[in-house]
Length: 490
Ligand code: BG6
Image (tube, rainbow, N blue to C red; front, top):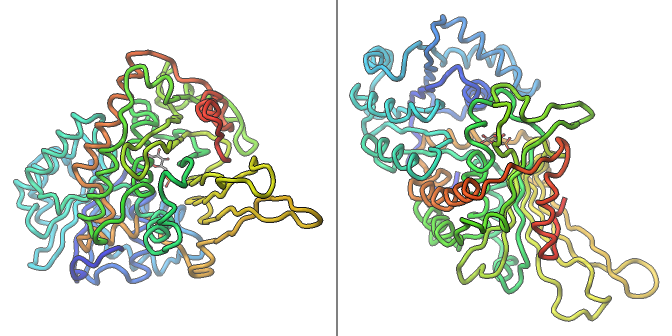
């Protein structure tokens, strides 16, 4: 948590709308289980999962237990802990689009002056506005309530605005928590510590010294069982509009005046506003979209995107995007930020590379060798490494790169379990700290930049470039950098 905005409450109700969905079962309940086990929840916390399907409390607990067992490391799961967690967990079958069902919901809740009420909307976004309205009518949107919205937050600037407006009519902005789980990752926060708690990098963190920046979020997974959603979203809306742009903001933003929600988000917003627009024919030079074909991942044959469940068999949705972003401000003028994300790539890795410029005059060697490079690996490993030039052992003066390497997981607390992003973010919501959540204007500024790219793709229609599953994406993505004398650092 970044700032202590208010005292930690003693009692809290967490309502999980979409309680039988993937997000609730795979992420939220396991995160809450860990928080319970480590006694980090307010003492009197109740969790109420809500979904349409009629099932008994026992049946829901059995479903939740099955998923938690699968998600939680064996060493962290015990029957005793599960049973004590289960005493906090209830299930209520209700239709969130029906206002009548909210009276039943209200009857299930305890009320008290200090009791915090968190509405976690792990549902499709078309339910966000009706749920907010129904909460208001039922008297469940008072000052101690908070609403958490999961992405996708709209499909475009217009639809995001409509959602924000509908939510804003019920909850003031300080009680709206738009989640981007990348901001809850330990290493992503470490990026801020690296930048703002060390004097070393700040003077170099600018166009005079930085040649370019690469931000890659590559996955080996395909669309799994989310084909119906993904085929309408694609990698641009699913990943670039949120996670990649948020990472770009954290790398590029100015030092905030304070480390609080408004100051940090003000600085991120300035970066989004300074992004040079990409639209029209520009999309051909500055963006590449791709779609995976059949291939092999980890020795296993995997099908082409077209053959995934709930995906149109003539789909032209992109599962890969690479693009060159530019930030028109004093600090970053002329420094390309290359962003790349893809599914079914050769390896899972999320990383940020700051490539520094070569020395101005090559005193040793011919100056053609690699220059300094700061490599921030977010996952699966959590590492920060700095590439320095060293002398090759032996006679003569030849140079070779060597790495100063910091394994964050081991350095911080060897053997200690790393918190999942959702654990940290859930605690922040309970406490009312929105530093790590996206403000309305940020989300809209991100869409304002993304919409013209998608429109450009539609205007100058091009099928996504094919790439085999298990590769590094389409060859056009390599060309994007090669044409500028650079390459993706794998
Ligand atoms: C989600 C996207 O927001 O992030 C998924 O919707 C993606 O498509 C996931 O797989 C990646 O998150 P992580 O934490 O596994 O890198």
